[in-house]
Length: 258
Image 1: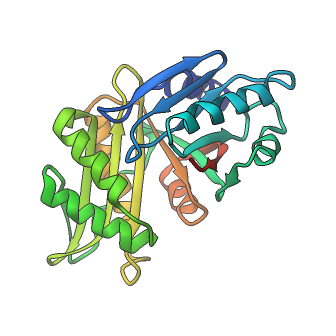
Image 2 (image 1 turned 90 degrees about the vertical axis):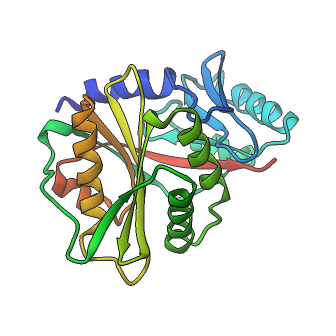
């Protein structure tokens, strides 16, 4: 993989050319910033910027004013190769709170190891309705220890309005949901994104996450997507590397309250 070329393609298609990922959301391009605006239950934030030392502070202030006028908290999704090099420090100085850094990993689907199946006793259930979404939300809350109301809203909206753009699956041990993950397909681009992948404590370390990645990758391949993208935690990065994903950059959320 040509890392420089693929990263440039990712920036162009998935960031500068971002598409709304929620039926109620919109993409706004203002100056050298691309942002997504949704409801309080959706994701709000800056996905791309092309700034320099002379323009960064004014652009940051403009985004704060814009989202606060709407009464919305928002995220500035900062990548390790974004400019200026001190953009993260400028965001913190403006009142943003950084969250843990993740690794932007991309794999060319045809080159990935896709033979992993679910471990013995685990079955995968496609999510197509509200009952399935409830299972995903239940796993998310238990695996990550966070509220899952936003995820539930987003999944229900996507399944209702554009079901071909989302693939979600729950791993069950008998009738107990123990892991869940989703894949977002971006039409008109060669990219699909892997999200979620949370496993409830007690079922970790059994290969469920690896099998869920392989399951979604096979679906992406069947649907003609060339690349898979993941924002990988420190725990998932080694698994993804063994499957053939490569690190191209880092990404860190900076959060600003309403």
